[in-house]
Length: 254
Length: 334
Ligand SMILES: Nc1ncnc2c1ncn2[C@@H]1O[C@H](COP(=O)(O)OP(=O)(O)OP(=O)(O)O)[C@@H](O)[C@H]1O
Ligand SMILES: [Mg+2]
Image (tube, rainbow over all chains, first blue to last red; front, top):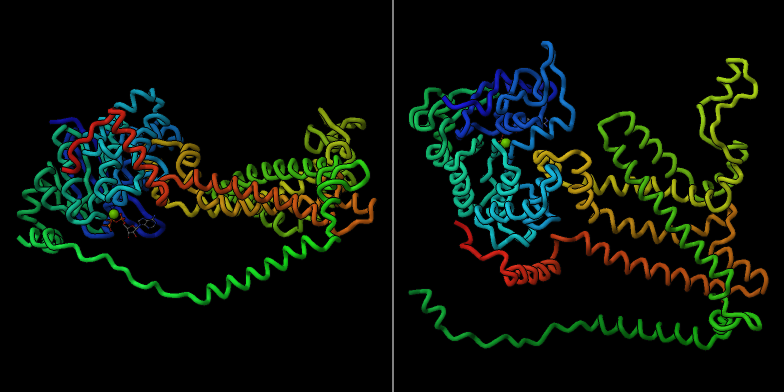
């Protein structure tokens, strides 16, 4: 078996009195692509944000590459990690957002170079070469000097992917990366993601693109009401759902 | 097929229509022209303005009142006071805005109370108050808090726990008092401006930065503040310009080397009133014009990535990048 890149054990998360995650278990092997499906409000984004500690979980454990996320366990007691240690963990987890969230005051190239230069303090020339290569790879070699506001949505999302990749993460999280895009732009972003998957990147992808999940996903989980209702190989879950809720959801999105 | 037919069709004649007339604009222009002419006529022909007194010679062998030594000294004072109190105002204002937005309740309440107090008290009252602070303390210095009381507790009468102290009237007198009064009051207003700027930025920006592993300080310095500047700069321009004029309040501290005070002195000596006011007016106009020009450039700097003028410059840069041969154009999209 491959090594575990992400392991979630019985993860619970509440916002005030609203319990959003009610015991999520998940294992994503190294180099695997896990797709997350589920209706709006089922807690998909929240779960993804817990993986890089943008949200603090209330119970359970999340491990990324064997390290407990956000805490240190010593003598049977959990100690919260300081800002610096949390930031360190996040450096190896790339995240791509539904709304791109590029930095509008920086050029495309600066967007990609910012974190490696400022956070990892790598030499600028080296980062620059790598950033250019990344942008070339997502098909944006000609737009390095532009500002995000001058790009189409699909181009912006590809820059966002390059920005995350420039930190050389071992895990990539995608939160509905194509949901804010016009239909004809979805393909170009999915193509980049397919390429990443082929290169062996471990990815957790929240998406409504059933075709992508079926083609690229190694594993698919269906979430509803804060629990994993069903999981398995995408072909099985999509082709032959076992649960009523999964069937109802799939009949709407297919 | 249909493509072909459209491209081959003759281009129709360009539209040459008679534009809509705006008679109201011409009437307005006429009225304004007449009013301007009347005003210029007044300036030129009414010799009570005494332009030579203002510009050339206000007493035998002395330069015009705008350029005499005490007035120039006052001008320098006004500029220095504006710069230093705005430096305090902006620096402290940013700190207070960050405190106000902090999740630490104590810090945010301290910031709230600060803005509440300094926005409530008129600057004139503050200026007079700071001018008289030496009534409260004879000496000001660094040392143990409650040093004297601690000394008494241990039966040491002369002990005051001070490492270093200075006579209060030396430290906060005149210029420093005026600078503190204006600067501390300004910080309260700047804090609100900066807070509004920071809050105007999409939280997704900070989130994306944090997800890349940036620290809170880096997020603020590199991502949030530079974007917030677009919102912060225009009202800050207002504040600086208001400050140039508010420096005249320190005459009540009293601070003597300040533009308005110096010009008043000239008035008092020469019994000439109107031309002195006009001279002051001209100086304030000049200062504020310079500031507005500066603001224009600062705004332009922080609007990188937004707006049309920027796009034009960007296209130029694109071309240079391509010509530099550094990046070869590859197939767009996939
Ligand atoms: N910061 C927050 N404070 C309070 N409630 C929140 C917060 N973030 C999310 N929630 C709530 O948690 C629930 C799950 O939200 P989440 O964004 O994880 O859903 P989702 O599955 O990603 O939905 P969508 O498909 O619409 O993105 C929702 O009911 C939402 O209102
Ligand atoms: Mg979501």
